[in-house]
Image 1: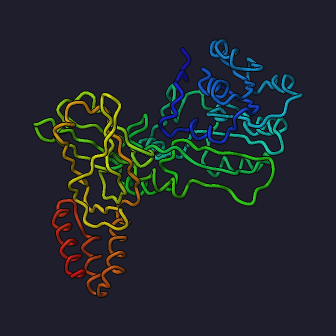
Image 2 (image 1 turned 30 degrees about the horizontal axis):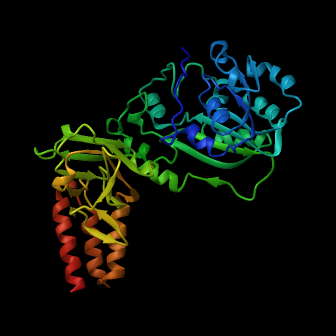
Image 3 (image 1 turned 30 degrees about the vertical axis):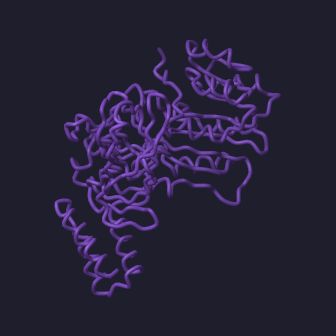
Amino acid sequence: MNRYDIDLDLTNRNSLSVLLKHIKKNSTVLEFGPANGRLTRYLKNELGCSVYAVEIDEEAASHLGQYCEVLVVGDIESYAWMERFKDIKFDTIVFADVLEHLYSPDKVLIASKEFLKEDGNILVSLPNIAHNAIVMELLRDKFTYSKTGLLDNTHIRFFTNSSFLELAKRCGLHCSYESGIYARADETEFGYAYENFEMGHSLEQREFGEVYQFVYELKKNPLDERVSEFGDMYKREKILGIAKLYVDVGEGFSEENSIEIKNPQTKESLEFDVSGFRGIKNLRFDPFDKTVSVKADAILATFEDKTTQKIEPHNNNSCYVNLDVEYFVTDDSHYLYTIDEEMQGGIEKIVIGCEYKLTGKEVCNEVVRLFSLESKTSNEAIRLLSLELSEMKNSRGWKFILFVRKLKRFFNA
């Protein structure tokens, strides 16, 4: 079995799901290194594309022919594909985790550019050698190769964001879009935790330190501007955390009866499969395991007969609300729901739309700002509130919530 035999996952944000957003239906595509053909099949069967491919692995290539107009089996850097495709111009050329396996990726990019339509695009994904997990490896005097991952033992070239953009520029290509797929150091194959390193906090603040893969769209002609997701996307994915749904079937809430979703802020909605629970009496939804502000919808319960019903929370422990955004100044944020008796028997799925806004100190700063605008609070009161927020410890979370609520009632009186 090929080491890259992985199914195409379109339910979560990953490099291929991001690349696919830049491929038009019924287009002509040249795919380098398709491996088991997970992307190739989707392009052919779902998007109606005419796919041409180059694959070095003969075993993998044996499964690809039915999805390709032409399949060249061989080394990309032998350039036999140039003769086979000499009369074709492509809408899109794809290098999905391929360039790092080549001796001269610049020469391949220059060669492939000649086969691109004037308004076409080249799509690239590649690993980030400057990921914090690699930095931690070096701090431990290690550089451990493996079969897959950031230090795949078939990687020949290594890239950072700036080094790849410089390479693309030398090849006469212009970046029209850039993004990244994020993973904390402890979520990678290395498993390092920040708290185990003296400089862990500083590493955690690095702009691209948790980008596992970079994703780019390149064009032949200069552009007025580049679309970059290393802004809002970076802020959303940098605050990696966990959302949990606790299910009470009459014994109270417990970790044993909970379901978690990692990195909930990267998903459009959160789906929890509760079909294994019967007689659900209460639910507790914890949107994040860090200080956070969110805009959460009522939960949508789906029943065995496929009917649905909204269930509104009866309580939460937010300290402030503004324009339906709840501000939780605690690492233990939660919403509580009571399930009516007639609904307790057959809930199959719980879906929650939860829009994540701010985390950490940004939540505290926003609460201070909103109080100053809404309550016309004196400068001294704002200073004290800001100080209370900035010095707050997790153990004082509930005390602070009570303080803020009292303060709000006082100024609104």
